[in-house]
Structures are given as C-alpha cells and as structure tokens.
Image (tube, rainbow, N blue to C red):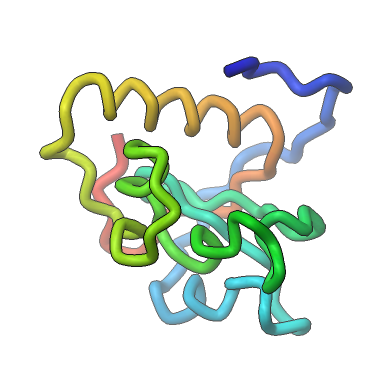
Length: 119
C-alpha cells in the first residue's frame, strides 16, 4: 500500500473535538446536512467528498462508524465495522496501522470518538 497521495494534500491541523457515537452515526454519507466521517482506532477522519464512502460507494459500510476491525481484516462486512481491534493478530494490527497512516495522509482529523481508547 502506498501511503503518500499522488498529489500533495494540504491538511488542516488535527482537531481534538470529542465526537459522540450518535453524531458519528449521522455522518454516514446519507444525510446532506452532515459531513461523511470514518473513524479508525477512535480517530475521526473527514472523508466528505469521496464518493467511495457515499450512499452508493463501495466503502459506504465504513462511513459513520469506527470501522477499525473491518479495515484490519480487509472486510466489507457490516458486522465487522466496529471499534474492537485489540484482540486481533499482529498481522491484522499492522494492516490497521497501515490504514490509519493511509487515512492520515489524505483526510483531515476531526476529533476522537467519545469514550474511545485511542492508541
């Protein structure tokens, strides 16, 4: 996986706002008045404008939730889109960390999921 975007992206400084699970769930790409967010390991990334995370997108399953477990396992299953990742194998944890790095070079960090354990 290439971590660097093809073209340099100017990102805003990361924010430390606390984002409730209720608000995050509304940021699933289906509500025009809300942004589209994906959380990884408790960190919330703004993927608004990327159609892949919109209602018709191939990655819509990740939008509006902490999808850490699914990303770690390269899974598109809704039931795997949950924040618990600590019990995964070291190989899966590496994949998850790679996804975190990939997102952090492309999308603005909007805050942390309320009550999340971030590492």
